[in-house]
Image (cartoon, rainbow, N blue to C red; front, top):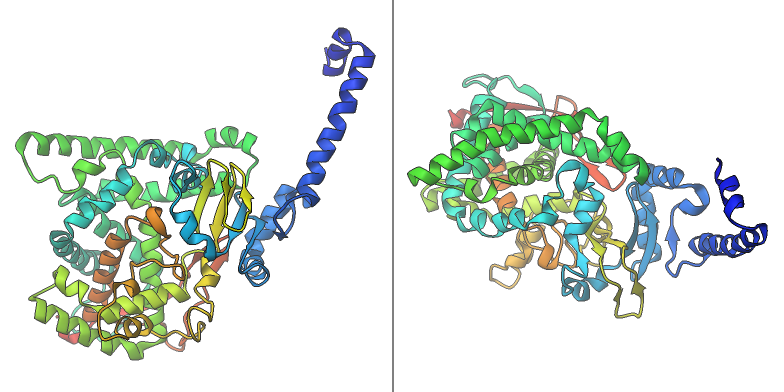
Length: 494
């Protein structure tokens, strides 16, 4: 029996007509309210007018232009935009200080991360089940930075010399060319694994393959499902090859890590970070992509501006000599290298938005605006970082911009360090939920880049002098994944 016949059999025609008279205006009111009744201005296509698929696709193709339009029009206030995953309220950074004080139960970074990256389908919902991933970054990784720095340097040398750049041999005048993005991704996989699971597991081929594949599959699932309607996601998810792979990889990780953990627990052996990260080692590995983009962008910038390499080499040599080797003290004193990385990150931002949060309880801003429960908010970090109010000559790459700022009053100022955050620099977030792994990320990125600068010459292919344009898709920004870079061992590095 059809629905309307079923209704007719149990409800008189008058009741059906009366119900229709109530429902139709209500539905129409909700529809019109979404179109013309929103209290926040909109940038880009309205999904209620143009359709959700069209609005999403518009931002996927034109996200940078739409966000720039919003920044110019509503720089000091806010606006709504439909992105490729969800509708978001983009706020001015003038609201940062009042928002940073709000509890996680009201304004949640974890809920936003889980929802936007479809944590239930990618297994990244562990961030909602436990704070282990952030606790590891805030405590063990940071607490053990000194011995960790030596281990990371050792693994960097092994990864580059024996694996990633093994084709570069002593006494050769020729450059060996590699696609920088995948080459550095493999290098970082090894270096980060040294920190997370220790030696010798970090060189286990099964572990390395599993760890890298997990990262790829998690983002494959997220990217595939993000553009689908919510009610279709569970159905499509069940047929994705990446779904089966990701659970196979988790099982493999358990087979590798659990026996090792039990052995260390019973023998009193060194626990490293394995003790804290057994259930969420892959969460740290998922962060490889952000670190990789930072290192690759810095390599591209140095290839385009090789005149800064010698200054960096002199600083690195001075710091390692004075500190007695490649230890934490030496790395922390590489202030020009730190400034170069920070300026590279400012120009080549990791994304259009930052400070992504989900409103779990209604909140009222200082200007009286009420943001309802369920709203996703963000801030336009890409354009904040290119705002002349905060950065004079913002389009000009000034490698020592932050070094000079930190020395302006004759004293070292930590607020200009690579891993620092501020209202003008949101690459690592802001407030209590700023990226807890940024100190570790800064450490490994500086070690890798410093080692490359000291032991290798590198350049673009002959005839190329400018770095490739970054790729923009939705709010994501990525350095070229195909750009070739030539490497050769320096004579002094033999």
